[in-house]
Length: 530
Image 1 (cartoon, rainbow, N blue to C red):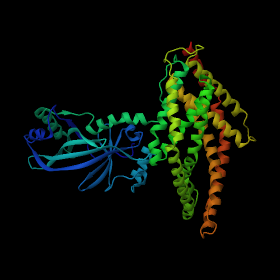
Image 2 (image 1 turned 90 degrees about the vertical axis):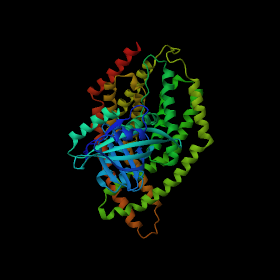
Image 3 (image 1 turned 90 degrees about the horizontal axis):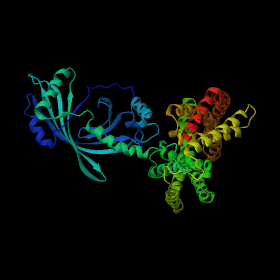
Image 4 (image 1 turned 30 degrees about the vertical axis):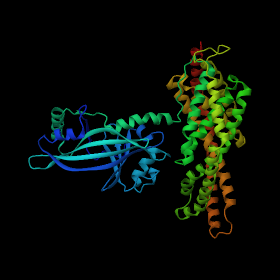
């Protein structure tokens, strides 16, 4: 995030001596020359981030400070607490940062947070005493704040710490350095390189890591295959359950997306590695996860349509963009109805029983991590075999596609690519990071093409369906249909372009250079399995 440069000198924080209270430290501070009491008060501060901590991962602290004079949203550097930007805001920030009324900051937040909502991560209550540090002419050279902070934990308030913050005015940096030295020498305070708020967020980042849907399961090559697979499936069950609350509350669309990806990965693993389990044991789970994927699908489709509405509007001349609003209203109505159904699914006995039985099954399947399998195979051997087989299938299906091939052939290839990608990601810790990273990047480039082709197909069918649902007796319906017709023309044109682009994307994926990348992975896995 480099668009905004700090407009203030960085704030310097200090830690109080061990056992020193805010009151006793203030007494020591006031003995220093040039220190003048300015004000005392209290403010509330909420540190915001996405559910999975996207801002903090980019070294950004987002805080909303509520003072008597009015609220303010601030973006701070987590590296040095420098202010990146601030925006007066009487009320807490909206759920989605890109909806604030400052286009530059809205765009910045969109890039930082993606589609994720701004959610309260840490709630603080701060008692602040402020002092001026003046020169011989009583001109203020710096503001000194002593802040006694409490943190809300589970509805209770606990002491979080006391911090001393020095805020120099421009032009006084060198003299403020002397003040800092005096404070360290005379009061026993010491420079805090992190800062209290960063330290609190760092502790909270453990929670961010627990919530992340990113597959980062560490496997050892010599692990028994079933033990490794169960470890991955347990992680995926965690992802499903940790996203339930966000899906139920509809905080943002990514909760349902991550839930559905975990379902698909689970189904794919069970399908690709079914020989590691009894067919009698896992078939009921395969059927029930298929039911769950279907039960969550319609809601996700509507989410995607609503996210695409702004892009659809850009396809129209400005004066016709409002003609798409009835479609948006129809989607919002359907979204509300589908969300109600989805909540019923997640609250249902069928779903709860599925997850309870699934957890119990995974627990029962846990052998000793290093125990050999019945046939002496290791996870490295199984991963190599299954990835290689799927890779060959993808090449075979892709090479068979030509300009005359039906769209269904591309959809089948897309599904095979998705299975291959899931398998690679599940076992990526078994391979060198640089090699597996290059393979995944090439996979993504091909999948982006195939995925866009599929999305365009779905969008075209969806718009035709929505057109049939519009009220034909409404006065504006003809204009709505014309707008949808124009969009359909654009989508059909883009679909042809994507279809043409496929040839180049698949040529890059199936090139000798990329085949060498895969073969290097297979050779590496073979050495690990030896």
